[in-house]
Length: 252
Image (cartoon, rainbow, N blue to C red; front, side, top):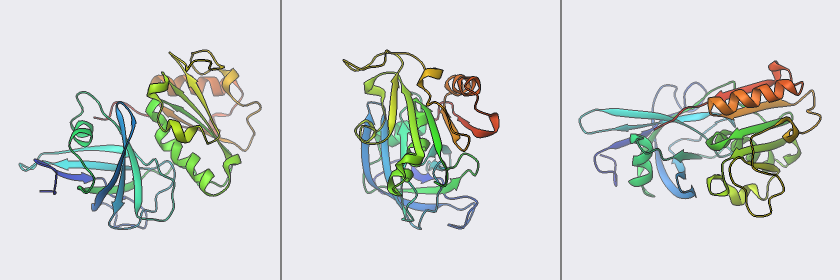
């Protein structure tokens, strides 16, 4: 049994498909930091047994194994920028009926060991070589944050622009950091006092004009957000071949 985690062995999905580590196998990871982002979201910083070579936009799988052999696994996007180290950050939303997310939020502490497998994904990735417009809805901002952080870390903040749609100030992930980075925040239900934009969903008026022909647009969020954002982009003249979408549902 993993130390500090009664009733479970924890396992976060290990890198699949690329050079490190061996595809299809799990590796151990130690929780070195836990940060609260919102009332229902925490970021877990993990030190892997082997260096991560993830790309911005990829994800890892997390798996829990009970003493009787029952397992539960979930996919979580990497929030941290690629930096060649053996540490990654996963931001996890706690869902009321989520057996994995609830366990991570309620039981896991710094020093616990987890297993991981990844990184996974090869299409919804940004390598930092060209301009990118990032549109995120709610927790869909997580993989886009890895892209924004990559641009900032490499001194190319001009390449990536983030527009994140969230319900209220209390629901905004990475709030303090986004105040320092090139990001625009759209509140759909309630804004901070004196906020210049009224509450409302993403519209064409919120997009930069023009969106350059070399710009790749990454959209991540619920199906409703992703579909609406894609329609808005197409209406603004962005070709479908320049839009990359990652939809998600509840990940318990």
